[in-house]
Length: 204
Ligand SMILES: [Zn+2]
Image 1 (cartoon, rainbow, N blue to C red):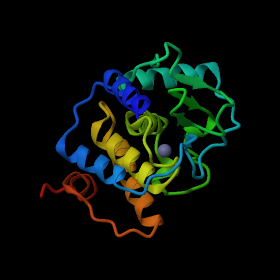
Image 2 (image 1 turned 30 degrees about the horizontal axis):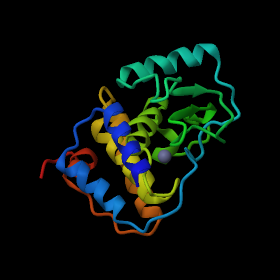
Image 3 (image 1 turned 90 degrees about the vertical axis):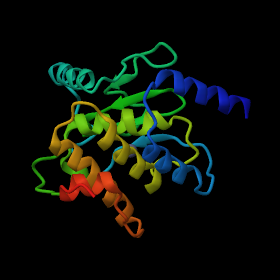
Image 4 (image 1 turned 135 degrees about the vertical axis):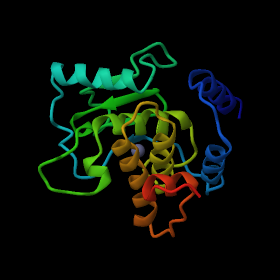
């Protein structure tokens, strides 16, 4: 209990972000789910570029620019690098709660050769970084198991709404990914105001 509180306090200190009512509702829905065991890395999946693609120094510089552009911190709560490139501690790009690090591997890049139109396959590297940082890191220590649809839905949904400086296309891909996560798990998709505005372009 005490440990969890400390972790949450840390999280609040590090991730200084407004919690809107809507955001809170999404989080609460997550917390109300059945409680599961501790999670491992939250790894990106889908038909993206291979995680075994080694990110080059040039690509790393571009990714660092993208990280800066979304206003992400680069040092974690332990004083280490938050973004770890080509790190093999996870099978692909993903967030590791315990270490407070985001592993960035080759699958951070979309696979534009396969011809997939799935938002998870074609979203930009910056959208993926937003999903990891604003989506997963924001909920560090969550009781939802890594990879469950609620955890992934929430990550993309919140990243779509709260990440600064994303393009309209990146916001759309994250929103669509959130919907897909829900749909794929057989859950009826009820879109909230934000989602309707993003997907259909209208206000109410
Ligand atoms: Zn994820």
